[in-house]
Length: 198
Image (cartoon, rainbow, N blue to C red; front, top):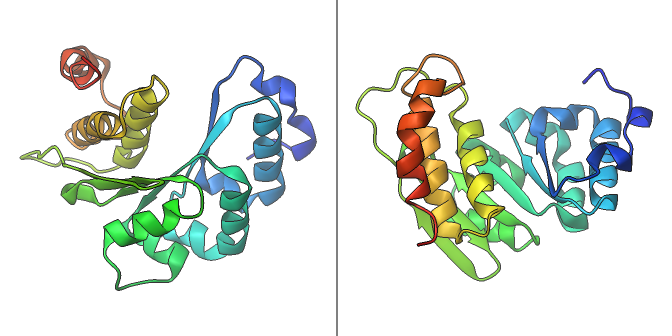
């Protein structure tokens, strides 16, 4: 957030395939525009995590315009997907499909109930990975997005990418703070990679 839009250039994305934008960046729209413009010009695909219903409420028109201009993947939780469409009654699969109709791959996370992924005519229910003892949910959504992107950018099918996302999100809530300890990543590696294409 300390960057100025003029400091962002296409060269910043040289050698990158994908640029992921965290939603709070949207509060500085000139900077968010500069990042997206430069990433697209460099040939990157893009994703955006909506981050908060407050981000959505403050930026709905800008977000809708960006979706139509070409955000490849949008991550939203229950509150954020309801805020984007100002819809408190539709079910989550319906809202995921509605977001996908804007031309994005929609990943709608619904906490302990898993997630829905919609893309074109595809709709996938992603089962949650249940945990017995939730310690701290901070960072679980970011871990979910990271897991999904890891699989998706390697060409995994959407359900497999979602399953990996669910695994990483569930592991995050078992620890205090938003970061999965390195020692636990070693334990997760075999389970995680087994979810991918055989």
